[in-house]
Length: 161
Image (cartoon, rainbow, N blue to C red):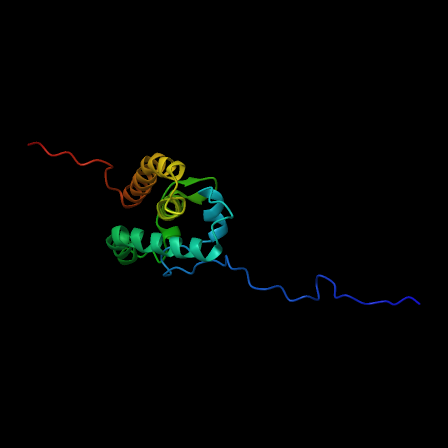
């Protein structure tokens, strides 16, 4: 005797919401897609979607501190979104959007690298953590450069003593 069991097709199965759904931003700055951040910053899939999301939220808040005045001035000048601010375009998009997304991705990666280096406490893990320390600083530096470029500030400050 044979039996036949009908299984629902792929179209019939409700797909769960992706844990990497876009992060809705404040309206002036663009929404951030965690999948784009994961790809741009080369964040491995071993980092869970929840941890990546938390790191991106932290990065958005960090960037916001430095760009708050710039956003207010841009809105006062009549630009409702960062994409509307006059700027050169690269690869079909505003360099200001590229800079913002870059800053967020780099700050998120720096936080993740910093947090994940404490999982292996063996001597090999300690050596690897020491090797990552310059990388964290470089990620933060590059993120800060992107923020400074976004708001039109120089990258260095020099004082004569």
